[in-house]
Each structure stands twice: as C-alpha cells, then as structure tokens.
Figure 1 (cartoon, rainbow, N blue to C red):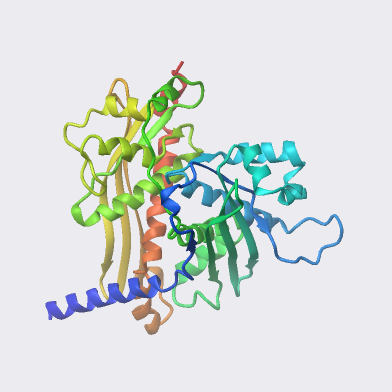
Figure 2 (figure 1 turned 180 degrees about the vertical axis):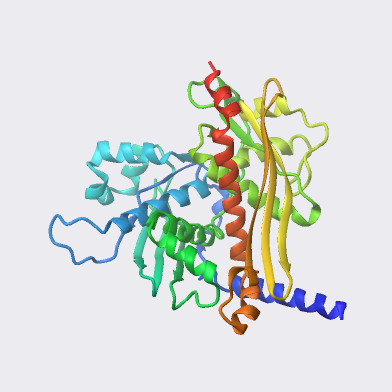
Length: 410
C-alpha cells in the first residue's frame, strides 16, 4: 500500500511538471557564434505597444495598458541584470532618449537607427520589445490579464538581429475559471483591482519564457573593477552562490538569480553575478558546487569591487502531495556582511509556501481530487520562490541595522 502511494505521488508530480514544460512557446533565434563575440554593454529600450488602437487624436492609451507595458519592461530588465552584460540603467536610457528625440511617449526615438541609438546610449546592443496584445479585464464572472510580445537584441553597429523570441503569458480567473477553490477565487478578485500586481505576475512568467534562449556570456574580472569601490554612489553588493543540499543546487542557482533581480530597486548597486562567478573560478570554485571553505571573502570583494556581501542557505525547497492536499514551498536563510570588516550587518530567514486542496475550500468532489494535482505545477513553485526573494529583499532594505549601515557610510 505504501509503495503504491509513493508511485502515485511520483506520477502526479511528473505529470504536473511535464504538463507545464510543454507551455514554453516557440524556440527563439540566436545568431550562430553569438558567444564568440557577445556584446559587452546592452540597453533595454522603452517597450512599444503595436496594437492598432482606435483612439481619437490626443487620446491617451488605457492606463492599465501603459502600466502593463512599463511593468513588463522593468521586470525584463531586472531579470537581465544578473546576466553577463554591462547594462545601461533604465532611467539613463530614458533620459538620454528624451534629451535627443523628445518625450518618450511621442515615440520620435523609434525612428532613429540602431547606430544612432547605440552611439547616444553608449551601448553595443539594443533590446527592443514590441507588445502586440495587452489585456486587463476584471469582473466577478471573469478576469484576464495577458500579453503577447516579441523581443529582440540588435547589434548597434550593424543592425543585425542577435537574438529574438516571442512570448505569451496570461492569468485568468473569476467565477468561470476559479470554480474549484474558493480561496483562489477571492484572492484573484482582490488582485484584479490593481493592474500593476496582475501584470507583475504575468510579466514574471513571460520573462522566464523569454530568457530561456538568451545566451549568458561570461564576464571578465579586471583591475579596473576594484577601483569602482572608491567611486561615489551606492555601495556595491555581491550576491554569493547560495549553499544548498545537492538535490537543491539547481534551485539555489534560480533563487540567487531572483535575489539579484529583486535587489535592483534596493539602495545597493548590484554586482553582476557572472562577474562574481568569474572571480570565484580563480579560487577553484565551479557552478553548482559549495563555496571553498577557505575562501578569502575580503580578497574576493576587492576583486569584484564589492562593499558588502550577501550569502545564504536554501532551507526548504520542493513539493509535497497528500492526495487531498498539496503544497509547494521554498525557504532561505540570508546574512549581509560588510566586506572590509567581515561584520554581519543583518541576518534573517523566511519560508514561503502555497497550498492547494482541502484547506483552500474545494467546491466539490472533482475539485477535491484535481486541485492538489494542479497545485504541484512548476510555475507555482517558481512563483513561490520569486515571492520569497521579494519578501527577503524587503526585509533587508527595511531593517534598521541596514539603514544605519547605509547612513553611516562616508
């Protein structure tokens, strides 16, 4: 009996994971030889809505659509920052475009050539985002927040497309869709009043799809990096590889990426993950392995130009199935330390989870059986992990100890 149950649990998890894996959309294009000569500095341009609105002259776009467009761009940029590119900050992109071609919303910059844009922004490559469909519709009966978009990276000098992909993502709810779980229906109704929350959830999914095919080049560690610590500006924070059980090491890599992305709006300047990893290789480390026990952290910080280090441990990761109930969960323990003194400035741990099944108020016998299975989808675990890192970043930035550390810096 026990072995039969274990077989059923394994089958359910495999079906849930496999069903989601087929929803990634068409494979993107990458120029052959991309990683032989990858662009060093990349600018994410303002995303454009290409849907043909029937608007009167001077009539603005629906507010929920401009929110969705801007949330999608920001989410993409934050997810790109851990990659091995030197990215131009969004505010810098917008300021330089406006100074050269007028207000962003008027779109005159879109007529400029890649060469002109690259020269103005100091970028080797440009990322364009064209959104062909945006929807935010909310009623008690049915809710939908969705987007379809194409993304491409263009070489600024030649105009050649280096990478291109299409993404589609949607979140639907309401009484017609959320029939099986009362709690999910109520949460969906509450979120639907805030387009930015709904579009953030949809953008998270779309960006995960988009970046699956984007090459992630290694970064060099050179002597110039160390001098950046002396430059004026926000303190530089290096997010170190997370410690984890062998079975959770892939999860640790994903959680580290989420942390680096969500820290982009913190008071710290985030050191590129690939730059940190390139430095760690010099100490005998390889991706997926624990950090060397005798790793000289102050020396590493100097090599990547970091003022502070964030390290941690994956405490929980995975899915649990109990026939009428299931859950996905992720947990982290983190500590922030000063690079020079080694003093721990802040430490905390947190766990996030999502349940499905009897505790969510199933509306019938069918829902009681199917809701726990659907709750095991990989997308739910990814969302739980991303929400966990957002919560940890919020705790870090609001910590009185961290605020004191930042205010006491010269």
